Image (tube, rainbow, N blue to C red; front, side, top):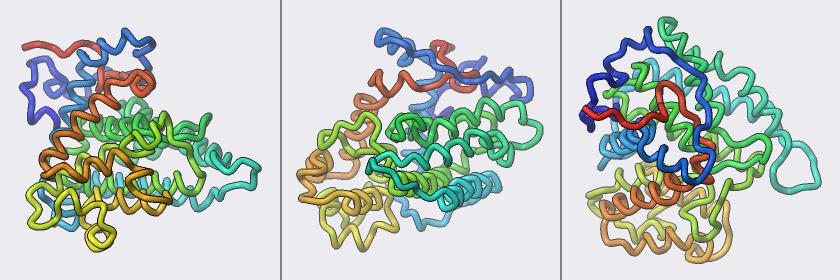
Length: 323
């Protein structure tokens, strides 16, 4: 999918029949700060950012209620996320002295850890079964950390990597791109918000008021793209309660703002200073470009985030092949 915007080298994955691909269990490769250079030069980085930008282009100017194609693979992914949601209902928080990090999350996570491959196997056709152990690692990495009971942009990136891998093996296709964001990623966000609320998860590596958001980043990028050239909603409107309440069902960005205002008290400019500053930017296209730059700098180029990223055969650590 990301390959649509890039000249793919002749020996790239797309030219290898997935059935003959040697799948491997992804593992960490970025162990020290100097290793970050390897990440930025890697095929994984090029494919990941290409995937994010392709989706960014795909949803430009479109509402969540826009009519789009929903393939069987998309339906199966939503069903997978519905299962995760149901498990939250079946695993209520426990009574404990600490207000944050409810230990029932570990029970919920253990179930996913045990059943992830079976869940992914429902999405991946039988002839690609060899890919399941590799791809399912990204699903397990995408829901937070069971030791620290926290969640952050690194976990969100693992879910995007999970979707990117499904594109690379051909389960998801180019014409799925709107549904990937509007149906699958949006459902993922709903489940993550429910996890964060139910188990009072800590933000992983949060920068407090100086970060964009405690938990997410991608919906702000794709959500700002949705609003490009909107006839009346401008960036200044997202700090207007009435505008948010009337339009949040159509726009991911406003849904994020609504969630922040539900979770935080006090003046918006104090608890979400970065977003408050962004509301002064004159156009959504400038917001979108700025957020992409910020995502690279604050998430993809930060060692504390990328040290947890795992590399396999689909998102490899080796340098980008040159034609």
